[in-house]
Image (cartoon, rainbow, N blue to C red):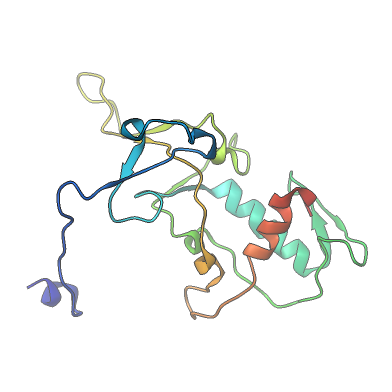
Length: 179
């Protein structure tokens, strides 16, 4: 019945009770007792991934700037990059950087939201929905830890083609060179 509804061969599976595993919230939580850690089920790192539109927009600027031989600073400003500078690349191929590459469940946006702010320790929870009659929120998501994305972000979703971006730009920008 499920395969007919979906239009493709598939099976429903469920996770056995008690088969959840605990994860550290952040890298500095190594001494945290096991019973106080967050637990997850069928996901690698967390069930829900949140990204901000400003982070994706900034990353797109990094990739576009590198493609054009320009360096991009943390604020998104571009300048000509010197030959041999870490931010300069000669590859002129176009790479579309959209939030879908990260396969997020939630995308947040706002004029006052700086790029990568969602990774700061200040983001401890996100309330979703209108307050109910008793003032309660419909859903609350707790931040567990920043996501360590795999190489799948380098796969063009529409074509399946593998690209060096955005990991190349992210690794250079996040390593401290800010180029």
